Structures are given as C-alpha cells and as structure tokens.
Image (tube, rainbow, N blue to C red; front, side, top):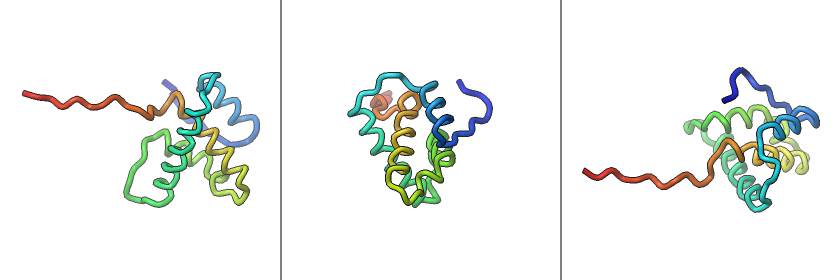
Length: 104
C-alpha cells in the first residue's frame, strides 16, 4: 500500500520512473491496448460527467496528467493515455469476478 501524497508529472524522468516502479516489466500489447480504451472511456466520464465519482486511481491519474491529456499535440495525449494504461495494470482490474447472488 502506498501512503503519502504522490505527485505525478508527465515529464520524461518522473513518470517513467514512477510507472516502472509500480507496474510489471512485461505487458501484453493487447492488454495495454484494451486498457488504453478504458483510460479514454474513463477520461470521457471524468470530463463530461460532474455527477459520477470515479475511483481514486482514475482521479489521481487524470489530475496528474491533465495538461498532457488536454494537449493539442496528439502524440502527447497518446503518450499520457498509454502511461496511465500501464500504471493501471497493478491497480485496476478490468475483469472483476462475477458477483454471486446470495440465496436463502
């Protein structure tokens, strides 16, 4: 468990060091692409819905990467999405187990 405040800046050194510390070294390309789609969806929710509260991971990632995610340069936006996708590997379960209904 990570305690304290973490400030993520999407500068060359800080983000790369942070993402390598907290994500597995080997990523399946298909998994990262799937996670990029989730990041883009959650970004849409974050920017377009003021009533829906997002889990803490997404809130922190979007606050930290905000300047890059709103950049006019597509490569900057894509790099931010990819880094968030990589960081989500250890933090966000895309396929939670199905919930079991309780029967009495």
